[in-house]
Structures are given as structure tokens and as C-alpha cells.
Length: 386
Ligand SMILES: *Cc1c(COP(=O)(O)O)cnc(C)c1O
Image: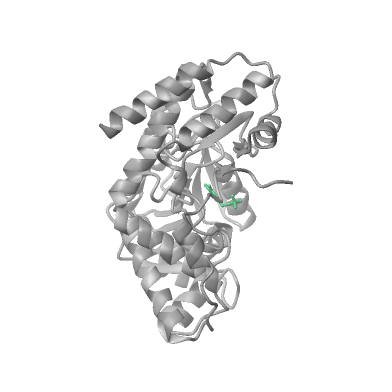
């Protein structure tokens, strides 16, 4: 099968030619001083993007390795944990929390909605036994965000640990690890950062380390261990296992490009791309998945589909007929996602996604106004450029 002309998926995303070139650099031995220096530099750059002075651990593997490892490190049997659920990743976190032996509390809303921070505050007031709050900053499969800026400080001020899945949050929304008092944050390279999928970026606060060291169940001598990384690599300069050398090159290159552009500028570019996409979708007559625009993420615009049309069929048609790879709902609901992440956040990328989706829906018998959509998207793009 031919490759798509455009990958506008919700991650892994298309990377820039510069990142692609970095991924192809010669493989070095992981104890080569050049590679080790690059690894340390990359940690510093991740800390800058996270806006934190906390330890950065670069676990090798998809973000899931760090999400699971960090949660296992923090959870002690019988611990009371409040999990916020507004999408598939939040739901999955809850299965882990219960499976690892904690007492699971949940505030759950529809996957097209967002948890209200006021409800979290009420719940914490009523349940002083809660020791940790878990949340997903940006629910990529449904394109909604959680108000981390409100919930983070609320937890910090009560001495409650926070565990944050921000795999598609960092660089796709305002992010303040330290100012918001966030204990564990996990991001991935393959979303808004526009890098490879093989490295998980984790920040760990001093308070989180205290909890981890006090936990006899925290993984040690394990692929999932944060303690191994702290003691062996941060402490003694020995890797607990062999890093993915190429992925580290790609990650550092993607971070360099983000820092050269400026963190705020990258976030603003994602927001601008979301504005263009939303204007186009609205004018085309499409319906947003989210119940309110204020909770829509800047990295992916989710469109609600009529029940008569399956989201995977839409995705496949756009790729087969128009050469554009979109993302389906991935279990979140009957929706299709126009992604604008990393290098695809900006310029005409949104129009390509809108055109492919619009014509796909028309082909499948849904009335859409593609021309109006293009005009509206271009008008927003033009207004931002002059
Ligand atoms: C991408 C992503 C992950 C990583 O998991 P995958 O199964 O590889 O997609 C975790 N959480 C969120 C919110 C993500 O967007």
C-alpha cells in the first residue's frame, strides 16, 4: 500500500526533516562520552519545557512505561486515590490504581466533557483520606483538557500527591510543573513535541521521591523502576539498561527546535491551528465532539459523527482515497480527529485535514459545505498573519 501524502494523526506525528535527520545519525555506544553528554543535555531541555527544577527521568519506551512505572512506584496497598475520568486514558488509570491494590475513588464525566475543579475540591473536603489525585491533562482520544492549573495547586496546598498524564499536554497547552506544584508528570515525545515515540519524559518532585522511597512496593531492579534511574543514572552515571540511542537523538533535536522557537510560541502555534481548524469545521457544518468549546484541546479537534457512519470507516476512506491519515476515536466514541500537533500545527495543515474529512463525509452521504469551511479556515489563518 502506498504511504499517505500527509499524516495528520494524533500521534505518532510527522516530524520535521531536521528531527528525521537527527534520528539517522550514527549509533554510538551508550557509554560514549558524547552520548552521555547528550543524554544530560536532553534532561535539561526537558526540564525547561516542563518548567521545572525537579528531577527528569527519561525512561526508554513509549510513555506507557513511565505511566505504569510511576503509578506502581507511588501506590501502596490500601492507599486512597482519587482518579479523574473524562476519557479512555483516565479510565485506564483507574483500572491500574485498583489493580495495584489502592482504594479507588473516581469522579467520572462523559468522554465529551471535563471534570469541574469545584467538584474535585468538594470531594477532597469530604474525603480527607485521599493521598493522591490522578488525572489526564489532555485526553487525546476525545480532544478535551482538564484544568490542571486549578487542580494542581489545590492538591499541593493540601499535601496530596498529583500524578499527571500529560503525554499530549506539554507544548500543547500552558504548562507549569513547579508553579502548579505537580509531583509526577509524564509526557511523550511523539505528540506536541514532534519527536519519536520511544522515550517517556518524567518529572519527579522531592515529595514524590519521598513517597516512592517510603513505598516497599515501588519497583526496583525492574524495567518499570524510577528508583533504578535515580540511583544508577542520576546517582552513579550508569544506565539501568541500554537507552534507545536514535530516539534520544530525535528527542534532543525536537527539543532544540521547540526551544529555539520558544515554548510560549509553540503553545500559541497549537492554539492558532486549533482556531483555524475549528473555524473551518464549524463553517462546514460539522459538530464538535466536546460539549463546550472551552474544554477542547489545542492539539486535536474532535468531530462527532452521525451514528450511521463508523469512525474507522471515515479514517480509512480519507487515507485510501485522499492520502490523508486522520485519527479515529480510539474507543472514546464515534468521532474523528483532526490533529494539529508538533510540525502539523500551523500553515495549511489544518486545511488539508478539513478538506480530506469534508470530502470523505460528502462521499459517505453526509451533507457538508466544504467550500465554506475552507473560506472560514483561510480567513482565520489570514487574520493571524497580517
Ligand atoms: C498517546 C498517549 C498516551 C500513550 O499511550 P498510547 O497507548 O501509545 O497512545 C498516554 N496518554 C495520553 C493522554 C496519550 O495521548
